[in-house]
Image 1: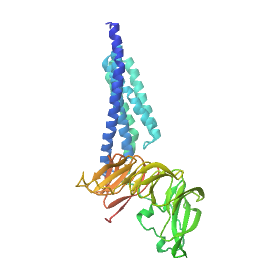
Image 2: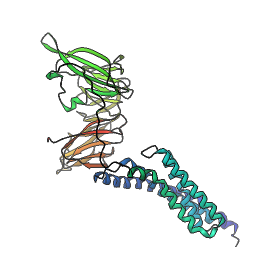
Image 3: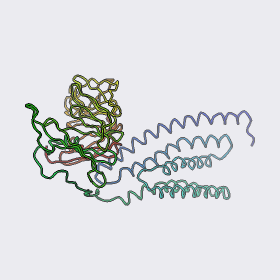
Length: 434
């Protein structure tokens, strides 16, 4: 049966709008799928089953990409088949098969939890099955059902790397093991000890292949009526704990210097001013004089410090120790990122009179309430994409807008102990004191 020329042209013209509309639908579907499945993964994570979250997220990536690709490609191939006079079922089967290509590329390139060799083998086997099924289809067109079964089987193969990780996941978290210990001084005295949990996060940092620590090594002679202390700054090899470099200096008693690791594998010593040092404790020459106010917060990635000037907060670029143009109208920075701060001391009780815990993000545009709950708890940045929040006997991970990404119940009083520069790992300390 011959199709009139004008009708054939009209069918081909239909391909472009269908492709564009299905692409937009696929994009929206992918956003929704990633959000929905991420909440499902969060619920599994909070259930205490100890499943590897990174593997679950990898599996959701494969599934979301395939579904979105199918939403885009199946209508497109059907329309092309319609314009070409190909059977609609055949066109749809081809669409479902081609949709495997983005998922296969994701599995091949993904360097997350999956073993690369296993991932590459799964993609190769999936491709072989599809090619074999295609050849069989052309030789035996009556076997369309067999070809249709090849598509879900090939998709299943793409989940093998993630399923292998989940199957081999330990039933309990790994037990911490001692790497090394080092004696920095024979004998102790009371002022040598860390004064608080906050101080503990400011008196020892990891930068590059070194661990830098500072401590009060003993009394120094008075300067007038001012009691003084001998402070010792040490640089240890991160792998062995061997002492590589050390500096000693005199400072005011009770004013323990604070340490901050920067994005460029340097360390900033805060003691009346900010001084930047190399990992071997040599000076870089960069100094920032603190005329007034306080500096005791740095972003998790080590790029930005918060200077509480009373009033207001200014941000400092750690690579230059220069003041950034961003000015934030706030008093105290509970946590800082490259362009904003978090605080829990602003209470939005007029809008939420029954709540006691509020997380407010403040930037150059003003204050933004991003989370509120019945329980109070300090919020801290885990990089630019995550926020840590403890309270109500659980820990939560929020996105920058306050949406809960993950949560897990923990008995006791959990608090953030530290976070890696890339924001991918963090440590939590739990105590039974309230």
